[in-house]
Length: 331
Image (cartoon, rainbow, N blue to C red; front, side, top):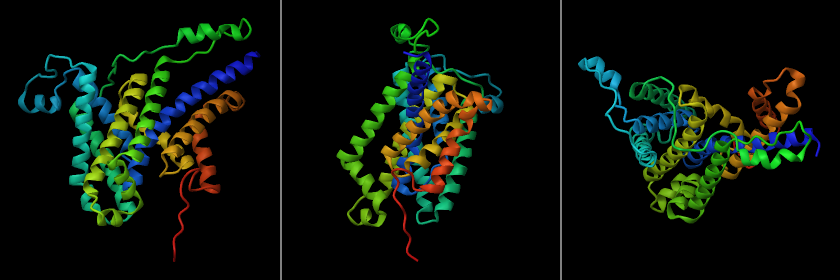
């Protein structure tokens, strides 16, 4: 096979795996927007908070140690033990459920019936508050996250594909972590779809998404459903935080992964789980192939803006996205 075709194929595969991670982040937005009509600006910060909490629990770090030491003049930073990764993940899930309950109890239930812009501004405030809490609880330094996931290039794929081209082609470089992330994200998406379609709670979520008042009239608790939705979104944020944090370290720039989800949502639609998946794959593959083919002609760095230009085109010609519903307002 021609080397150029093989290089393009490698870029395509890596784009698919990047797209799955983008879709994973976008899912958190879709879940909350479907059930409550709220665009959750804090989703990226939730991924940061979840990842920092996981690292802190695994390392036995004392929460708010900087404040405790400043107030009492102590020098306490760690409990002196390490928590296994699996148990730490379960404890972090519990923290995210508690966070979801607090958000619903202290913030969202007081804003029922408010204009969408008010709800959006509330999530902006929540994002900055949560970022500050993350700093106070766990510190601002970059943290290494290692739960035992394989990292580095897959040598067996590289060896298996090395003979497909000329002597200058050394095989596909596929990162092991990207493959694991792709499998985990795919299983999570399948699980969310099955949960939404075939469980009582999932059907209640869909009912709330369709009509709040009708859901209330048949005895569905909006408070319970919204806590459930924020809990699921928190779990999705944890998975995204683990994958991105393992890849590049747990740092405050991790919260910016939410910006990558915006073009995905604009392409797929804000209310569609399949749309988030397809949109993520289109963005992932598109930006990689565009960088590979056009990047050298324009000086590179096209991955920084390609997704947003594509999203802008969709906003102009199909604002509801590929799978979103066209909204018709009566006047």
